[in-house]
Length: 119
Figure 1 (cartoon, one colour):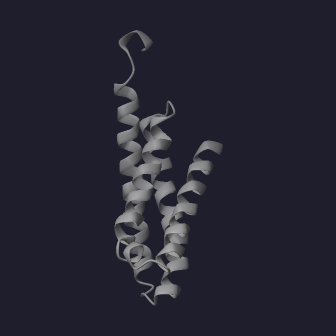
Figure 2 (cartoon, rainbow, N blue to C red):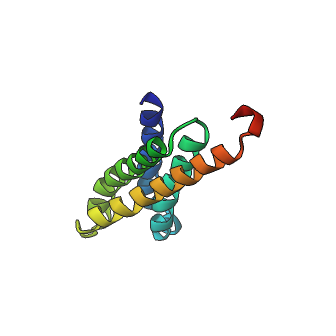
């Protein structure tokens, strides 16, 4: 699973970067919920669309990409922003879902893009 690890690290780095940029930009801070769920959606889609994965592999990979990045991002963000730790499970689950959704859609797009001769 080295490719999944790479995409997980990309999502994690983007989540932490978003948190840190939110400390200097009120706009990014206000949109952190949208960005926090958009990052795993896009990274999950890229992960699944660029490889020939089964639906199960894409789903699990996308879920993990979303969950790990969000959990670490929230662990950094909560103390910095003074938010409640109750946000950790909800935010992690929401991003895990969007990572799963992105990977599932990416996998479907990959399958649809194949020509009949290639199957």
